[in-house]
Amino acid sequence: MDQFNLVKQMIDFNRAAFNNTFGAMCMAQEQSEKMVNSLVEQAVWIPSEGKKAINDMAAMLRKGCSEVKRAVDENFSKAEAYFEQTGRTRTEES
Image (cartoon, rainbow, N blue to C red; front, side, top):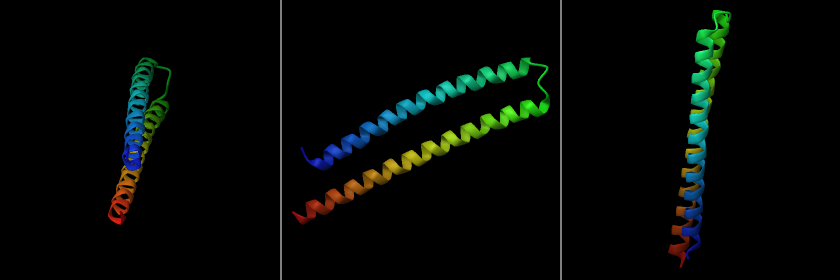
C-alpha cells in the first residue's frame, strides 16, 4: 500500500474520531445549557445580573467550541494538502 494513502486514511480516521467526539461533547454541552437555563428561569432568587452572566458564559462557551472546531478542521485540511502535495512531488520524481 502506498504510504501516502495510508497517511490519508489516518488523517480521515482521526478527523472522523474528532468529529464524533466533538459532536458528543457539543450535545452534552447543549443539554447542560438547557438544564442550567431551566434552573435559572425558575430561580427567582438569582438577580438579573447573575442571569446575564450565566447567559454570557454560555455564549462564550458556544463561541469557543465553534472556534476550536474551525481551527481543527482548518488544520486537518492543511495536513491533507501537505501530504497530497508531497505525494504528487514524489510521484513526479519517480
